[in-house]
Image 1 (tube, protein in one colour):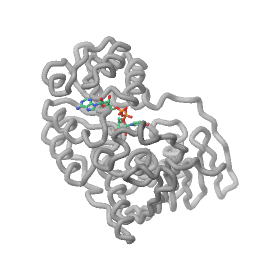
Image 2: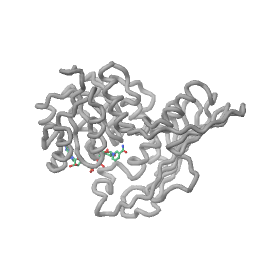
Image 3: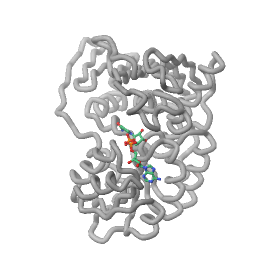
Image 4: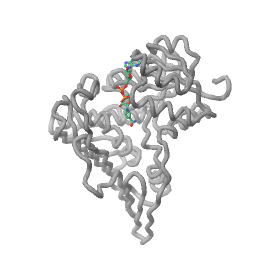
Length: 341
Ligand SMILES: NC(=O)c1ccc[n+]([C@@H]2O[C@H](COP(=O)([O-])OP(=O)(O)OC[C@H]3O[C@@H](n4cnc5c(N)ncnc54)[C@H](O)[C@@H]3O)[C@@H](O)[C@H]2O)c1
């Protein structure tokens, strides 16, 4: 696949989050090489490319045709994800894609078909799965320490000082896909999915706009999700306010005990009386995510989240929007289908 055992990557979109991705490539020099950056904003492309000594392109079509790359990394505004995924898949490139995977069920169908037809690997850039407390929680669940899981909660809220002049494509539902929920809210949704360990089937949601009234979409969301394995999930996410002190980042309750995390430490308490609080060193989640992407391609192993989970997360979010609109429970569509790649 590669000339020297490394994955050669072309970055598509060189704005804010691309900086964390470039650092991630530089932190994985044995398995990755960032060789090209495409962005019509040439200053952005240059700024990201020069750190890695990569070539620049003003569009990804030329980059896909000309650059010697195995994979692309998509860091675009949300409404541009689907077309970039489909173009990259048709060019035979593997794909790492920032959240959300895409914006609608129709787009998800196109993404699934393009990835399947090309036989490429798509990994969703769900960076918070690479935080050590999350990894430890998943290990405790997987090894049965909590027994059967009953409920999972996730929270991702902060005071966001966006204003209409700085918000760009995020202010409009046509380019963002909704509001806060399909943006920052994607993180607690994929975390909920991973911790619940089932297929999401039903959602009820309430959305609100507490403070960022210039947005077309909501600035806050509260959601309940039922999974096919009986787990119930609840999720709170907001750009309007920081959560109250002691609100957990995530928690899980099972038949044998519970765990909770503030995102840095993880505590668990079992009905047997055993309890512990574990501290973890800080980890660059983006470097870990990119290392995992490269290892998956080099070893031919399945990434933690492919388009299958990306579509399930999107399914929860689209069902939440339907539920809020209709003021009723909404079924999650498109979830549970196997990844076709
Ligand atoms: N994982 C995280 O914590 C996290 C944080 C922030 C953003 N994101 C995600 O990253 C993605 C990008 O967000 P951002 O904050 O970097 O946005 P941004 O607006 O800062 O950057 C987007 C970049 O895409 C470029 N672009 C626009 N059209 C293009 C095209 N056709 N081809 C190539 N480049 C094009 C723009 O010029 C800009 O440089 C979004 O999906 C967002 O949700 C993730």
